[in-house]
Image (cartoon, rainbow, N blue to C red):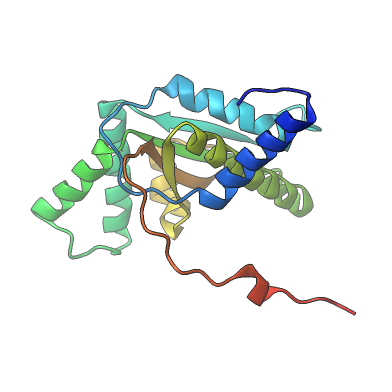
Length: 202
């Protein structure tokens, strides 16, 4: 996005940002185009700047999985955790293999891993800051025709999943993002308007 100091340029930039916010969608179907790790790192770096202005060190780290071998290993960890928890006790043989192949075909997986400080107030603030950063990241990605789906299932907190990723004792998985380029936009689903959730204290 080009930067210009003129009022008309600011207005155009504001309109572009508004369009991104209003039109970004969750993407679950990706093209086969590769998504380089460098591009993901570039977008994360840009997203972190406004979110952690006062922080000397990010309270999180990122595990990017974009190679066939890495995605195969991640798929095994994911499906292994599901099987262990009996979430998909019916997933056997070919169906299990099909689900793993579907994960491997996704261009990139991004595990966002947060560091727990042991202070509830600090951890809550860090959690909020990481969420804000990831929303900014999703908009920056959308601007470059990169879509994503943001996963936060209970599976991410199971010991087998944590051990499979090699996390430290003070780390937890904030979320798992599936990323890739897209061709078709999904239809807009009906949502409850924020106005219907709006109240005021008087």
